[in-house]
Image (tube, rainbow, N blue to C red):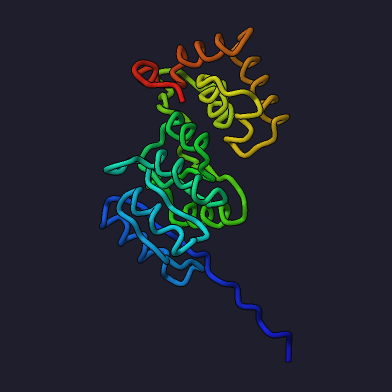
Length: 225
């Protein structure tokens, strides 16, 4: 006889979303013998904060836009009662700005609702393991066509970096938001400056707008965070 099999407990989840159909679909998907267990559901942020001490889930899947307090405010309040909570934002927004707001508020990861099932499962497991996954679709606020700009001079990661540069984040903050080292973030910033032939960050961001790599519509009427 071989050694006894070790039973790995499922990752316990809380789902927070004000769309009942979305929650039901998620609960059904995540309860299909994939190593997850949905232990609690909430239809708004206030309920999530009330339920947390009773269930203490391993990972919370939190929507950004809800009635009442939004996901970022829910996260900020949750951090006060459960500083070590692991929270994965699950949202319809692929805006780099929304991602930056959520990660700055303390989110452990950010994925969009149009991700493939495997990417969602992997993101949950990564958050549970202490990682900081970001959805592959959350790269830029607008993807220009080749007809508009030709081939992009920047890699997808460099576009993520320049979007965060626009928000005024430091190399250290960019590294934390993207789950990379400060040294790597600094190297990406240097690469952006070189490829865009920019002398500083402000000029790099301006040239990224000129090339259509960032969406100018978000520049106005959006508060800094």
